[in-house]
Each structure stands twice: as C-alpha cells, then as structure tokens.
Amino acid sequence: MMYDINKVREDFPILARQIYGKPLVYLDNGATTQKPRQVVEAMVDEYYNVNANVHRGVHFLSQQATDLHEASREAVRRFINARSTDEIVFTRGTTESINLLAFSLGEAMVKEGDEIVVSAMEHHSDIVPWQMMCGRKGAVLRVIPMTDEGELELETLEGMLNERTRIVCCTHVSNVLGTVNPVKQIVKMAHAHDVPVLIDGAQSVPHMPVDVQDLDCDFFAFSGHKVYGPTGVGVLYGKEEWLEKLPPYQGGGEMIKNVTWERTTYNVLPYKFEAGTPDYVATHALAKALEYVAALGMENIYAHEQELTQYALERMRQIEGMRIFGDAAHRDAVVSFLVGDIHHLDMGTLLDRLGIAVRTGHHCAEPLMTRLGISGTVRASFGLYNTREEVDALVAGIEKVSRMF
Image (cartoon, rainbow, N blue to C red; front, side, top):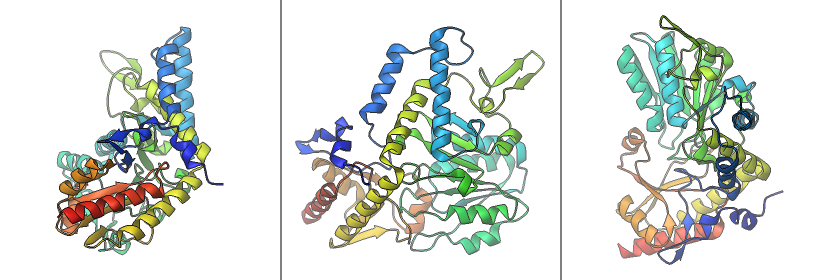
C-alpha cells in the first residue's frame, strides 16, 4: 500500500516555506534531501540528554551514547543487508568512503602499470581519488565508455578486464542521466577475472531497495544526507575479507589496539578505519532516517518516484526546444535538461524566483558533460515527498522562462 504523501510532507517543515512569496518546490534531492522531524528531534534529544564521547568511557552517558552509535551500525547493516556490522565503516560521506578505499587499496595492492577501471558517468568523487592514487603509484585510469542513450558499453568492459585490473568502480545510478546501471552484471564480469568492485550508491540508496549480498559487490558507499539523514556522515561497506587485507586510512585514537614508540597495532574491524571521535550524534540520526524510509517501504518510495519521473518526462517532452539528457531503458528519479539556447544558469536562476529549487551546472561530472558536448544542465531530482502538482509547477515555470527568451 502506498503511503499518504500529504501526511509525509507534514514531517518535513521546510516544505511549507515560501520562497519569494511562492510555495517552495524543492527538486534538488540529488544534491541533498530535506530532513523529517524525527531525524532532527533525535539529534536534539541526544545532544540534550545523552551527549558523551563513545567507546572506552566507563560512565553511564558514554555507555548510553556508545549503545546508540553501535545500534546505528546495526541499523545500516540491516538496511543494506550486509552480513556483519564488522563490514560497516562510518565515514563523513560517499566522498570520504571512496578516498579511504582509494588510499588503502593503493597502498596494499597497486603498483606501477596496474589499472583502475571507472565508468564514463562517474561523479568527481569516484574519479579524482583514483586519479590521485594513480599519480602516486604510477597506475593507469581506464574508462568504460557509454552510448548516446546513456548506457554503459559492457562488451567494452569485458575487453578491458585483465591481470593488471585492480578494481572496477561504478555508480549505481547516474546523478546526471538517471541511468540505473546493471551493477550486478558488472560485478559478475569483474569477479570472473578476480577483480573487486566498488559501487557508488549515493544516488541509489535513497530511491530503491539495496541488498549488498545480492549484488555481491565488494565495496559500497553512500551518504546520509541524500537519504533524509544528517550531513557529515556516510558509510563504506566492505566485505570482511577485503577490509581485513587493507591498511588503515588515517591514524589516531580508536583505530589502535596498542601504541608504543616503536610500533602500533591496529584495532579490529570496523574500528581500524574509524580514527578519532566519530560523529556519533549523526550516526544515530542516520539510523532514524533509515528507519523512517524503511517504515514507508523502499518499494513504495521507488514506485512513487518512478511514477513521478515518468510523468515529468511526459510533460517536459511537450515543451518546445526541450532537450533531455539520458534515455536509458532503466532510469531513476533524475531529469537533466536544457531548453533551446537558454543557459542552464539563467533557467535555474529564473526558476528560483518562482520558488522552484533545481540544480544547475556540471553536477560534479565534468567528463560526462564533455562526452555530451555541453557545459552543464538543469537538473530536477525527485524525492519521496514530491508530488505531481510540483512537476506541474516545474513545467509551468520552464514554459514561463522559455517565453521570456
């Protein structure tokens, strides 16, 4: 049964705001989602009533905060169906998760002439860390090409995999094109060559059920703020056998077992990768966010957003001069577009004056923009609280701006 969207919207006070005297139409969920009361109230409650540094503390508050923090790890494990909480590493977000992996994998396994494979539609956070590591180690970055429709050329990937390939990195859902990549198939192809796979799940976790054991990926990264949780917290999932092999990313408190002047021994998983005080309030709030969306039902959220996206595509394709980027057979809740010769910044700025929040620019995917032959797009991205009426407002806004030009 679908959820009551009007009741859900009441959980997000910001949606009742007015911008320039117009009702807010928030369509920038791909960048960050709004937060329900339940998440914000959980953070306030912990700061007011439980706040104390986690782990190692013998006093009551520290133990209570630690219990909440570790219960959050279990909530994440359950949400993505990881095998063990040892496989759930808390980070500051997808970007730090990928930087952690790029550094640790590079230190442990990459030598000169080795190859790292990424896709043509990656976010900068799944390009730059690997480029930096390749620069340090003398490795080579190779790119899976894509079709004009915005689908990866998997037959080319098959020819790219060899004994020098150290990892394949692929976004689950493109933050520009909305393409849902066949990551399960990519994992199978890579594993046939004994190559591990990282999936960037920043744009999939908020929109569809994710089961890392079913995907069989070796690593999976996502951010809390894109799934109705707080900023500054994210997750790196890694299969236990892989995390055991990799060295720590950062040193400090928490990630150690023993320290002497001569040497340090490292803590067990997952703490080996969690140097310093974690954002234990944010991890608790992330768990609340995951509980919130789980209660609505990820299948229900997916169905609602799919219906909304199809409705938006149908309405927008009727606008004269409309160019929509990405026409994959399987796509998610993102529509990137340009209209005629109107610059994306002009369109976004004028839509904002109508109370409509969209994202403009290259969306941290400049190589993809180069492939498309453009400098940027306007992007409308949908969330669980968006409505058909808001799509109608977007379409009317685009038509109004178009008439001005």
